[in-house]
Image (tube, rainbow, N blue to C red; front, side, top):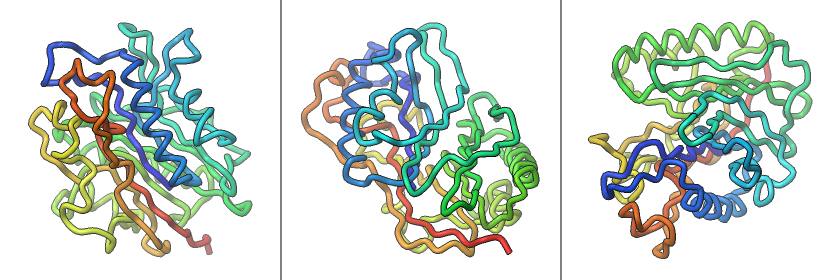
Length: 286
């Protein structure tokens, strides 16, 4: 499973007066680099945040571009979470799944998403592996740390409700996305404790090896706005799940760049933050 934020390009570059908002030439250059890396990893499940399409332009669509490349044949479950009228773009939370994982039949809800704070969102996908369902929660916590504990409580309540609706136990829950926190964050630790979760990074990396935002990444540094590098793009699974591999991903860099130079970017990176790749085997419900 891979978690990847595609960066909606709404944060302007501090290295240039020119804004990359709505620039699909630069975005396509990044997507082609993402596609190259996806062809190597080929994860069964890819969890996306900040995926975009432009209204009325099928060629300017992250889903269409990736579906004609590394993710050809994958099923998509996408929820529109934000509409940008200035660029005619729609932003999505999405999951792309390839065999042996499938989208599950019998979703009991009209699909929806939850707004979390000013710029956070939560959505879900009901997936199936070996004819047994599991719940994938796609979570983007708000960028501001204000009231973060309040929003973590809200997230816990809604996840608990989803598990009850689908009659699933905690063993069949995966939460993936932008999930800031540490063991001193009350809201984050309460989320881990209530659902008996662990970070898939646990035991596989230390300190700098775990960072998903990095000072080496030109796009992150151009948009950091005082934010320090961190390990905040995570995948959380039940403590009983077997994690056989877990690592930062999509962190390759190209020295050659075409459309990023007007924004002060001299090297090409896939996105503002790296992805997180995990190989997980879940337990069954008793």
